[in-house]
Image (cartoon, rainbow, N blue to C red; front, side, top):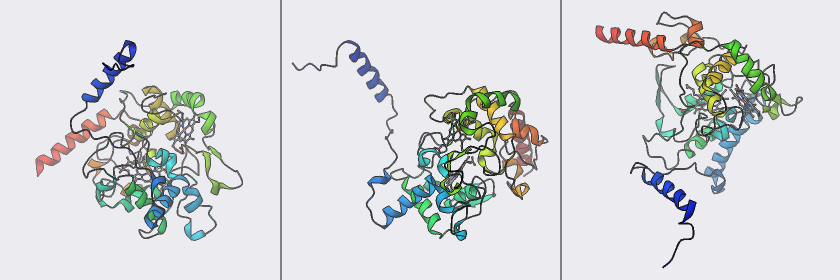
Amino acid sequence: MRVCRFASGPFALIALVWSTAATAQPQSFTPWTVPEVSALPRDARGQLIRDGRDMMLATYAHIGPNVADAAKRYAGNNLACTNCHLDGGTKKFSLPLFGIYDEFPAYSARTGGPISIEDRINGCMTRSMNGRALPNDAPEMRAMVAYVEFLSTGVPKGEQLPGLGAGRMKELKRAADPVRGSAVYARLCAACHKPDGLGVLRDRGAPELGYMLPPLWGPDSYNDGAGMARLINFANFIHFNMPHGADYLNPQLTVEQAWDVAAYVLSQPRPKRAGLDKDFPDLLNKPVDAPYGPYADGFGEKQHKYGPFGPIRDAIKKLKSAAGGKQ
Ligand code: HEC
Ligand code: HEC
């Protein structure tokens, strides 16, 4: 008889736990992992996808505000897409860009209509990157789109992969508190992002080489119309991803610390985007944490910025059912 040398003692227990976990998966479970860019052939498509990855990892070097060719200065700050879409958009719960390609064209509450993947990337170009839109046929845009498409390789249309977005932790019953948050910031963030929030450039004389540690506010950060300028996005993102190195399996911040430090960072100055009052033409579909008006729900800018969000959601629900009743 052949005896497996691991199937006794403590190893047997581990094997049992593992196989139970494996069979507990729903039957439709199909494992999926991020496809490997480096394995692509060196043909035109392989090169375009590699270019797209470069654009995301070193955005500042290709379309940043300090690149030599003025016509290519699309971004208004020296961030990189990967500062927020971590690991080139492949890390779970850090706003990953895998498995999303087939969702576009998608409805956008911000514009009140359908948007293409190019429009969505330009949403981040004009807000997160505080810059201007790239034309759809610009080589840099085609490269980023090819990369995002590649990150959906093998994902059936309509399938939601686990790990999208930034997570959804419990909300506080009180408003998030910038004063408590400033103490958290000093203890857990300032060593890297610096007490003045301005981060650390790789080379102070050459911003086109980007940041070693990105700024969290100030003139070279994202503007007040960006997704990261909304408390719920920010707090969830840092809960699972900061201090740098944390992930969803090992969160480092408590839920309260995450909300409060988010409030502190978002109370600091950042570039302003003109025309934000025209975002979200249907105000009942405006995210509860949009830090700029107008609003239809009777709550002011402060509660929309710091919460608590429960009462706002209740008010919106009532307005929606009243509007539905009239039709
Ligand atoms: C400051 C942080 C930040 C930076 C920098 C940034 N983004 Fe984003 N991006 C976000 C956030 C936050 C969201 C989700 C916003 C929301 O909830 O509406 C997002 C959403 C997206 C989406 C849609 C994802 C989905 O699930 O549908 C795409 C595509 C995208 N970004 C591409 C880019 C590209 C390309 C760049 C660089 C040119 C970039 N982003 C730079 C924060 C950022
Ligand atoms: C060990 C250093 C380190 C610490 C500590 C740290 N961060 Fe970061 N943070 C980084 C780095 C590096 C990046 C960019 C990641 C990348 O490009 O892969 C980043 C990115 C970010 C981003 C997205 C990019 C941007 O410019 O907004 C936010 C938001 C953020 N950190 C907030 C925080 C907060 C809040 C804390 C404290 C709770 C914190 N970080 C602690 C190193 C750190």
